[in-house]
Structures are given as C-alpha cells and as structure tokens.
Length: 348
Image (cartoon, rainbow, N blue to C red; front, side, top):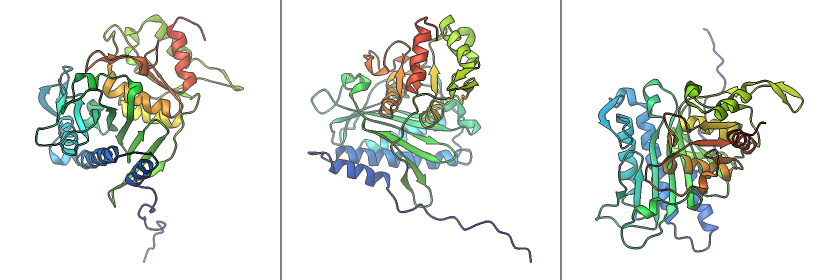
C-alpha cells in the first residue's frame, strides 16, 4: 500500500480577533458611543460575505456577463455589479444607522425606504470595483466610505454626500482574490481581516498596516502613454530607468492589474505608487472621487502613506458632483511626492 505524506490536516482559524469583536472593543473605548457605527459595520460585513459567496460561484450561478444596461457613467453594467449593488443596499437600509446612500451604479442618492428608521451616517460605495475583470477571474472588490450627516431631518440630501474626504469617519474595501480580505480604518490605524469560509467569520490577519515610505514598484496603465502629457511620461520613464538607491542600482518594477482594489491592496502592503493620471481622453481623471479615490486616500493616509491628484491632497478636494472624477496618485509618501514633483515640471 502506498502511503502519502501530505502534512497535517488543515485546521480552523485560531480563535483570535474577529472583525465584530475588533469593532466592539473600539466602540467601548469611545465615550458616548451609541453602537450605531458597530451595527452599520456588521451589516457591511454581512453584505461582503454574501457578495463573496456569489463571486466564488459566479460562473455556475448564471451571473457572469452584461445586463444590457449602462450605468450613470455610460459603462456597460455587469450582472455581478448589479447583484453587489442590490445586496449592499438591502443589507444596510433597514438598520436605522443611515440617512442616505450613494452608489457608483446609481445616478442619484439612494434614500432609506419610508418603512425603516434613519440614522446619522451616510454610506457611499462602489459595489464591485474592477468589473471588467469579472469574467477572467482577476481580483475584484467592494469599496465603501462612511460620513456623518451634515443636514437635519429624516432623509439626507446631496450635501451629505458631497463632503471632503477628510470628513470621513471610516473607509474600507473588500478584495475578493485568492482569499477574501476586508481592510478598514477609522482614521487611527488600518487593519485587515481575512474571511475563514469554514466558519464564516473575518479574522484579524493584518494588524496596524503601515505603508513603507518608499517602494520598489509602480502601477499604471502604460497603454495610455500616448494620451499623457510630457511630465507624466517623464515621470514613468524615470521610474523605469536604473539608478542608484541606497547603494544599489535598480529600476522600479511595473505591477499593474487593472483593478483598483487589487493594485491598491498590493501597494498598501508592499509600498510603491499606484497612479491613474489625467490624459487627453479623460482630462478630469477616470476614477471617481467619492467612491474610489477618497476612501482609498483615507486608508492610505491612516497607514502613513499619501494620496494626491498630482497637485493637492485628495482630501482637500471639495466635491461638486456625485460622480465627480479625479486623477489619483497613491501609495508610499516619498513616491507620491516624487510624482508631484515631476508633474510640476521639476526634475528628480
């Protein structure tokens, strides 16, 4: 009889810190906390588990491909996009924690139905970032941002959504990749939790994430080089040119997935810079300020990194439109500063 040695059998996640316990412990440390934020986060986590389950079986569940509709940006809507949007709305609308929602997939703010109570928070989200990668099994994700309302009355208004990134009380994302990881921040640290599918819980796996001050890679779609201005081209050429750094001669490595969540997650953990510059085709930038750039900037700055539109902090931008776009340079502090210097026309 042939005997195989495959090592010890797999074990369940250690009984460590769950996402729910992590949030509850932070709630207890804040005088006067009501539990509203904790309740909202539990609902977001539930939505992430449901979306993850459907992403894992998308090809079997008949929800790959296009719906035949276009969203407010004129982009073709994927079936999984629509599913994720509906799951998030249904998961959070009844909790009494929100006065208003806004989604990248919806032209207007989404009100809480009249039969449900409203609360003091506003939720903005990109239900499924990286939609163009859904059909080819590349990592995709969910991005969310939480603000306190600034208006009064039962229902919120557009003014509650059009707040600077610096006013966020929390932001996070979920990446559906080789594992499912939820990363969030309330501004005083960044923590990552990996979903253990065997028990259905997120467990703390990345505690107090810090972005290195300088990285070794850059992430940008160089297929758009012909659309960039001269300063942007010079910056990327500089990154690709071997030079001496800390006694070693090397060039930055190119790492580009084409899914913001995937590219940012790598940059957050490893350092470097992710960029989606303005160009002749998209002079105002391509990424959405409220649903993508601002929440990622909140997380990055809380981890010691930086986020810029090439001239100013993302957090200093005053939103004028619900679906406003922006250029984005985000990641290691020194690498973002270098990009800004090139964009100003300064040499390295």
